[in-house]
Amino acid sequence: MSADKRARMVEWQLRRRGIEDERVLDAMGRVPRELFVPAEARECAYADAALSIGEGQTISQPYMVALICEQLALHGTERILDVGTGSGYQAAVLAQLAREVHTIERLPQLADRARERLEAAGYENVQVHVGDGTLGLPELAPFGAIAIAAAAPGIPQTLYEQLEPRGRLVVPVGGGRGQRLEVAVRSPEGPAVVHSVPCRFVPLIGAEGFGE
Ligand code: SAH
Image (tube, rainbow, N blue to C red; front, side, top):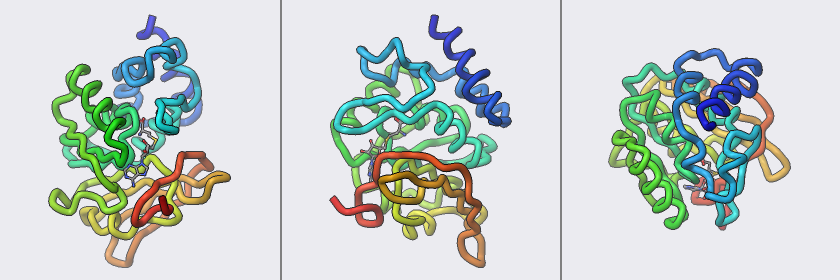
């Protein structure tokens, strides 16, 4: 049963690997991940891995989703920007942790599918946008936190500038061989960066990402 698999995922993949934020663990224990993977991969929905979602893209590994959420240090009142909607799973988890989530995807087919899934699952505080997420959503900025689920060459400056003061941005920085998940806090002196764990994401493609 999915609820059992989900509880095991939370215990073995998240808590025992150091995820401590109880709100994050609770959210990961509630979002039905099986709704966000292709039908043929449903059996593997709670595997400790990223899974293919078509168009050459992936739904991130549960641990990475939890780590990104934990690093954002959310309280529940924030308006969030989620760059790289993919399956919509990360947006669904963020929707449990914040007031309002705006998620942006460059591939319209994926955005459409994610929108349908999020609606079917009943998430009313998530809006799916189509476009180049490296440019953010200037008309809706500033955001309390920004999550980027694709690898960037550096901290995207335009996105950093769409953060509220003390707002946090999480982004995998590095090339195709692997990256490090970096957390930048907006401060008057410029981005305060904390390096985190090695990771591997698909590339961020756009004006402030990698070229087409
Ligand atoms: N958070 C997703 C993971 C998706 S993988 C999930 O939970 O399923 C990263 C996604 O970023 C891919 O769908 C890819 O198409 C998208 N992407 C890459 N560059 C982008 C850009 N500049 N703007 C928006 N989305 C982008």
